[in-house]
Image 1: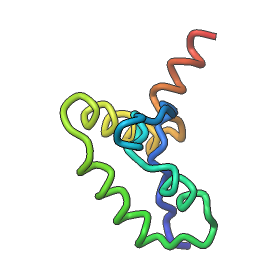
Image 2: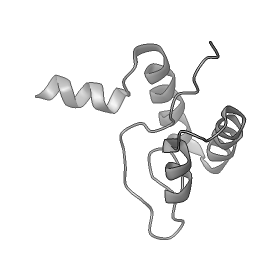
Image 3: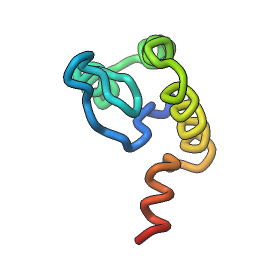
Image 4: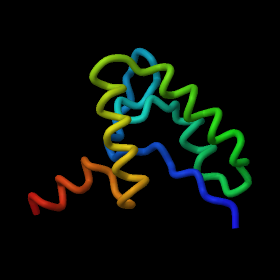
Length: 87
């Protein structure tokens, strides 16, 4: 079985009104819909991951990479993990 590409959502879902990009993952609303579509190809997802990380700079890129890596390895974003720990 082909390995799944994990969604770049890191549970910080708020859209910048100027750019239209999510503060957490830098995706547009249309890109988020594409990720949820079961017919979206793995190749598109890989290319989109490259596109969204190229949109990020500084702390946003650092935070995204750290949380996304954690999500890939543990099945949950760091933000969600910290929320669970406080409840």
